[in-house]
Amino acid sequence: EADIYQTPRYLVIGTGKKITLECSQTMGHDKMYWYQQDPGMELHLIHYSYGVNSTEKGDLSSESTVSRIRTEHFPLTLESARPSHTSQYLCASSEFSTGELFFGEGSRLTVL
Amino acid sequence: DQQVKQNSPSLSVQEGRISILNCDYTNSMFDYFLWYKKYPAEGPTFLISISSIKDKNEDGRFTVFLNKSAKHLSLHIVPSQPGDSAVYFCAASEAGTYKYIFGTGTRLKVLA
Image (cartoon, rainbow over all chains, first blue to last red; front, side, top):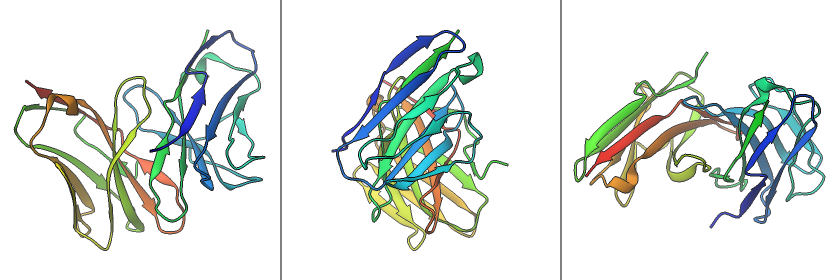
């Protein structure tokens, strides 16, 4: 069973605020990912990491930043939120050998 | 340029009948494919995967078929159950990259 956790599940904030979306996994997976999904649209990869101190930008340009200081933790930060950042953010991890992605329950962000 | 396409945004099927969800891809370097199921306000849940060295993989009521020459895969659910009602995403990965590209999803509704 996958153990990957995201907080907060829901967040409503005003424009210009700094926010951090937390993602933690207890499976010791090397690879971690952040996807962004708008309703009815595909999941867009915005950041990924192959391991500690490794971060890469995904296929969709994003103003967010990530860090990977510990294997189990992959937080995403928006320095100054805007209404265009309103979306669902999904964190995932995978074990190097199998390739299956395990997802957290998502963080739904609304920026007013 | 969408590399993974699910051209049917929605599908309705009677309980007990077969559900067939389709997915097309354009990148011939993709070698690993996955299907996910997603309920509203939750993260995607892994269903089944297939490697490009196979053309079929079965797990209980779920079977995935891969036609590499047509760059097409399909997910068969039989028999369909009302609890299968969800959005289904296919995803593809290129060898060695462990980056997953997702389609836009197909909303399946199984009618009781």
